[in-house]
Length: 457
Ligand code: SF4
Image (cartoon, rainbow, N blue to C red; front, side):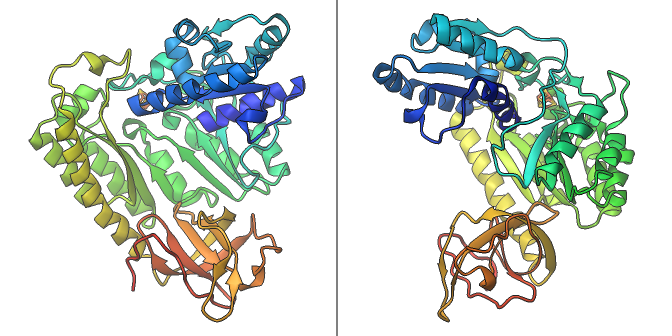
């Protein structure tokens, strides 16, 4: 969501003459887009903002703005604590940002705007490309009405509100014209898309997006288990562009913890949904979020979570230690779990999930997967081969959202651009968080990957 918002920020500031620079030292305007979802994210944001004080001392005309969820939560307090910050703007003030920046540049005033707008803000098309042009995020709704006990989102992003299908479709068509092949539809709970406004259902929206010519793949995130309808499950079978991957946050395997979290489903309902998903789409990859150490979580509750992980065999997990968030009801719950205990539970959970990561990835060794190439691998190029080859290491994703790295003998120097190509690869190796593949019909390159444990000999 923040990546998408950052794109919107650059979109509204471009007409003022600003362009993106990779170096903060060269900037005339620095916008820090913050996240408040966990304590750690907030601390990171403040530590980054703190480091900007030196830049401002060297360059007094520099404008520094703080946006996003921390800005929405803290508002004017940020201006009071940090005298070198010029602007604080909330999650619903993006369309007012250009006016604020102009005012500050001309009058050197300081502004805090955390007003919540009751309607969705639509921006004009013509955005600069921020994160490459193969895959992009598209927000379909904002805010959340669920009020999970640990979560700050409804307080910092406001109540749930959906965009008109027509605006979403037009945005995606515009992106496809610029070369985008894959979109990820974003919402805090996409399953409730359009319900409040009487728009079409999320499954119906997916059908419309599926018809867009030139678009190759569709992903979405996030789905709330309580609202995962049969209609949406069948979309995985019926829509050829919808990728075989669902991120379905479970948070805990204990019904009593789920109840106190205000998640409104049980472990049994969650397992039933997983069962149905796998019946309809046997190869689907399932990922999830789990919080350990929620207030009052007992050893027995945690054992229920481990049991659920064993039953589901997730492809991967995002795991978190519970942290109090301002405004979230759980901050006032009794039974806080000591850090040492939370660390131990997280360690046990990660250890267990490591096994399933390996198992799920190993099952793909020997299969042929279609990937969409979206850049160079983290290990970059060149890769030096044993037979005198050197080449460029590319990366792409399978429909199941697995990262596949490979070397193509045809792109020895990196002159040939594979970005955006759809390539069949035979999976040769499985690692904890990625796969190694050999493009079909291309001379095999020797594998030289360092620093990652290999599960396949
Ligand atoms: S569904 Fe719950 S966890 Fe997700 S954004 Fe809404 S309140 Fe937060």
